[in-house]
View (cartoon, rainbow, N blue to C red):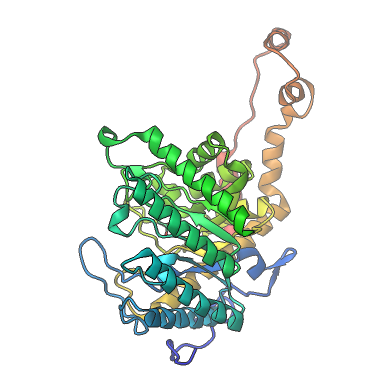
Length: 439
Ligand code: XUL
Ligand code: CO
């Protein structure tokens, strides 16, 4: 790391809630204990290489605005190494301990697979060096199977077998590199695994091909001895009209149907949940209930814009809801909070990358503390437990244990002296309790 890429910015320090310094943390205090673990152990923040380092901030209506002095835009290994230097300087100053990348973020796509592989290998050597120097680790790697025109009709679900093979080859290399860099996970986001119209699509065949690719990935994982966790990242649409991995429930069903469930967990992204018509806490709860909540792509959408705006998470209610789910499952094991978020097109200076991540980290630090207090007092949990207590004994317990029948239940009801009376759900009271903790 020869040249400094953020010369005007030093190490971001925790200065407490009263600080007026925009380049300081007010709530994220890495080593402060919340319960048994420190904040950094709970939150396991990661920088998303594609957004932080490679996003030009173009949108469908205009060119990129991002000023990124360390990136000359050339498809060279030399440029890729300089971008990596900038990324590690950025993460070091921010105090983020993990990063995530696609193969084509860290290294350029070349005219042939052999050349692309060589470029990626060369950059991976450099990344290994930077990881060693800084202690920063790879949360997960992935392959970009959606940007190149060859993938315009899908990768594993392309109607063309050579394209499928290309995707497999790319995943192979990306897995090799992820293993080499000690990645704790590997993510599959089905970038274009879906369809634009059913009129030209053999859906069953395409979904089977997707399962085939994932089975081969499982085999290859065993073959090379990669110990990281596989994740699937659900998203309902965009770029396709319909994506096969549309939400957590669809992913879990797909994984079960094709005997893949034991090999995969889910990487839940906030705004993908919203696009699927769910809250993020719903998607997290569905995943956790299946023991499959692995990692989180932390971002946010915009209530007024119906597409994947990938904004930084600043809503304390949302970070609280997320951290409640994370704490309830006993915390992350291999996963973490990956900021799959980009600064706005209007926020084009390098410094904006710091403001964005500081905001996201502070919002999650607050969410963590609030969620911890909430769960510790049991204020809401106790209410929920009591709400279902009729299943803890008597006929309820028999239902719970599947030890009864329609005949016995009919007799039970015939013996009741009055109509069943369900207690109030007290939604408003519970919402008020939550507000008290957020205050
Ligand atoms: C796209 C998205 C991806 C995945 C990784 O919406 O979220 O960046 O996280 O491929
Ligand atoms: Co994502």
